[in-house]
Length: 152
Image (cartoon, rainbow, N blue to C red):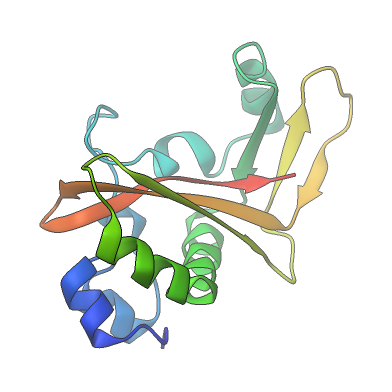
């Protein structure tokens, strides 16, 4: 189980209490079904992409990355939230005005995905995740996971 106090889960709503009990974030609860705001885009843009798909994104961004799969993404995001629990509790108390974001990072002991930098021939295994929470009501929660991706 993720060690998130019930007060944090119920007041902040960062993750549903049920998700806290099973110890795992469910990205679908944070995702925008249309790809438009509100809602996140982790499933749409950062999970299970091929090297070719990442290289295609490099025309718009200096680096592109992907989680290996949804299971890995949800596990490492859950670990990141647990590791940053105190920071997130404080953010949830004072996250004003609406639209405020809370970026957090976490380094996993195992590779979580891969990434490519613009101009590089090489694919890099990645161990760090960046998660960005947004303070804006979505799916009955006061905030949601805007994005999460492996970071080099």
